[in-house]
View 1 (cartoon, rainbow, N blue to C red):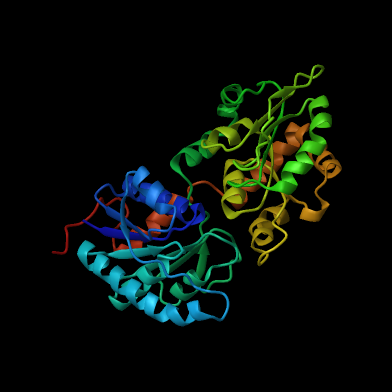
View 2: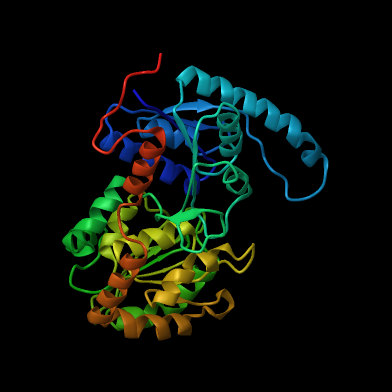
Length: 378
């Protein structure tokens, strides 16, 4: 039996592709033993067991960006975590390690390198994190979500997505559009703009959407507005334009994003890696508004899709109600243009990234295509 260890966590940006690859490995090679390694501080302590996967924990090793006491303690913390990781790899008889970034990834990859276990790295963002930058120096394969990510020997494979999103991408959004709209309280016969600033919401997107709401509804454009759990107004309510019948449906959070995507014709969103890739893989055109601070990562995430003509970019400071109307109305009322952009997006981000990563991992582990597994080395 081949033993694969997947290391990463902290946020959904690391845990979601990790879980997707675990599922793809189980599908591609049912005899494979898959174990995830994370830290007690990350989202992985909830989502990995919920996905039916085995999780082992090591101490977190935050990597400070500034000089100070935390930086002095990094070598000690890293050495301890590497020791914990090496014990786990030895216990599991690991054949290959896959690093997804985050606090757990670097110690596990370093432990694998010291034990001469091959390493595969997957970088989710256009701007790579420090853990993956280090791990790529000794990795057997370096995989990225976006073309042009500045990592040596990198090969762009896309972002591994959950099985439900991959199935929807292959079936087409139209196969679930009417049912999804009805389930969310929207009319099935009118176009839908999906607005979401990510899991926590985005004030700029919320304010601009409110400013444009009345005119959008009057024009027959429905709005599925995901505010973020802490931003949803206490007096929120479903609204319906008396003339057009278009509905405004406000929500704090959407657990089943596949349903929200399927209901939509167009999305207004931030440009986090997950959102950018999910919408593109599904063929859902987007108007993206990158965060105005940080290292420019979000603008880089959207760059390939903007260049291809699939998505549009709006600078955060320029996003007003009038700008929403100027961008949304001509596009959402043109099914042919929406279809053209959706097709372009899927050319940039074709479905099947989880399967491509899984196949690379099995190749590095020495499992020929079509082979379920091999006997345990012991």
